[in-house]
Image 1 (cartoon, rainbow, N blue to C red):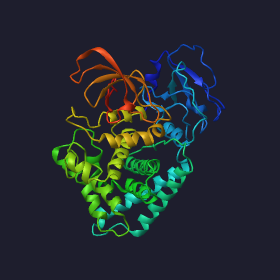
Image 2 (cartoon, helix red, strand yellow):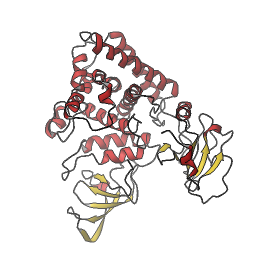
Image 3 (cartoon, rainbow, N blue to C red):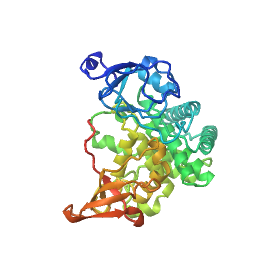
Image 4 (tube, rainbow, N blue to C red):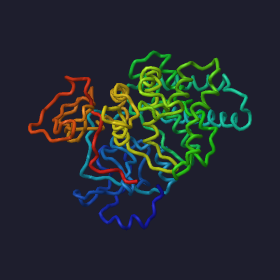
Length: 430
């Protein structure tokens, strides 16, 4: 994300805007108004932005990557991260102001609790790495488990007292270790949030939060040069990666201080509905009937958190992009490769869709989609409670041959049918 000054000189359409003294109530364009309202892009000087400032625009870096979505506050940690990466400006389109439907929403988890969870993840994973390196006969201590469980209880309390909050993933990243700490923190919070929104028991909510924090324990046994490798992994290296769920499970298998569901999350979170997961490669029947639903849902949290996080070797997707990619990983009869069961993805989206995408639909009217039947359709009207069951106009049959007479359907009246693919007008650049 480092930005060269020379690259900015080529962006002749971008006008600098100094946003001075803007607080939470600054919901219009940043102050220091640009001269050309019709300009596609305006430039925001980060030197003048105060923590918790909120605007009605999506902000991008010079490469077009979404850095902050409209109505989401500039957190202090984000501003520090951008400054550390020598990013002095962000950009936005002044023609695309986004009106908030309601008052600005707060973060689901406050920054202090996020930092506490991150620090706990750091201590935990460093402790487990030392076990693998120096004392492989040791197991996880009761103290570390209880400390993590107490922290998950704090997260659950925060979620239960802030029902309208939006999930903002940790994004700071200096190296591979920091990615692991961030990822475990994000998956833990997402797991606890998902279980809460689906009204699971308090015990299950706690187990999904703790399981999310512990799910990648086995990765601490893998050499960093493999985990951070940019090039394609060799078959031998990928075999090592595929062992990490089992390695992590062996560490917790006989621990009396962990629940069975938490152990199953560690072991089974990389299994996939098409049989191409690991470590066992369970077929679709075993995946649906032998893997607990809570584990399958935690896998969705794991994938989402990975997609929207910056890695040492890749840029993150926006929430909207990540969710659309995940939709395309849902099972349909015509697919040979897929990750998730439609019933699980539907629960994930119904519970978290608006929490993850700042109150917006990740698909919408005008999107071209393909149904589980294979038919191609265009979305005409969304259903807020059931976003995978909008009103559509069917354009083709299941062989993608155009219909002589297009058919309008309210998918909510046939709940067994669902959207299994969304077509992108423009692919994300590598």
